[in-house]
Image (cartoon, rainbow, N blue to C red):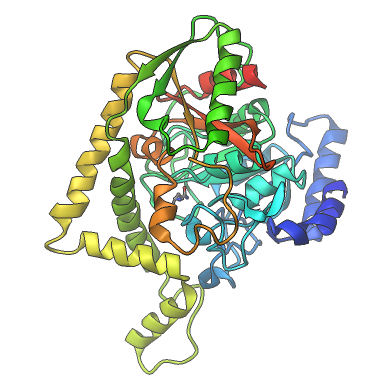
Length: 447
Ligand code: GLN
């Protein structure tokens, strides 16, 4: 009730929640209370959480913030959502995002942009902007996001919260609406790294319904929270520390470096030479996968169907023309182009090769350092409308987050300061494969 009242009072200004169902929320809360009374509770029992609109959840509208799925009530629940519900967490509602998770500002949502709680004239970031804004405005203690090219870390950075993208394969993708399947990973977003570690303990695990889910032993992601940082080697990639970063972002990085040095960490310069090429590689591959994944929205089985058409072909065409927004259409066009006969070798195959080189860069770096410190974005949250008009500019703003997804590495964003205008700025910690507990520990020591 406390949270639902806060949402009533404040959501209109930031537009974080797009679907609420108080009866369902209170019924889940009552079940959690009963479980607590019986004494068989999990540490998460009764804690409320917000889910990004990308996660299917039985009985809830799961629209992926698209007109295409505005009428879609999910008939099953994503594994990661089911995992935390099994532990007794309570659904507060479904939060805003860029349409089909394509975007960096949340402005491509069918339900309108999320506004940054620190200054409503600025974006909350994207695509998990609703998740970040809900946590930042204390309209939820925690939320789920998804990160295909930075969509957990960048909005976490812009809203002053902590968010983790796990190693690819650590959390199940089953029931999370597919954007670019070889990149998509769900992750926790909360106030602190400790909260993220506790949430990841509940979310993670093998799932036979996701063919890329990894079969590994269960681990405790809180185990390194109190690990000393003495002698920890932290790499600073020279390609991420450039004059393109605003003075505010550089100051936040300097703060973080100072804090870590005080705790005995050592710094060294490293290089990730393919950084610049990760943008074209990502936008070729992610768009290619998106064009395939989104072919299922044909107006036949579920989702939006046009009311005017003269034959089947036109029904497909009109349904998709009406159901998808312009950014989604742009990605489908790019994706079908790079996959088409005659262009496949020139674009898609080349991007696949670049992907390998990007991953190799990181492995070379991790021979020298334990973790990597980096910015999440070149600036604090831009004003609404600033990036929306220029897609290429928006793609370029992903420069510091997407290489991690190409490589499949774990990374998190944690708050590190504020801009001169009072907007939060986060820094990014990147770990080697399966080192979630290590980067969570470093972040915890900084909080
Ligand atoms: N901005 C990137 C894109 O639009 C990342 C999105 C994401 O991580 N879901 O593809």
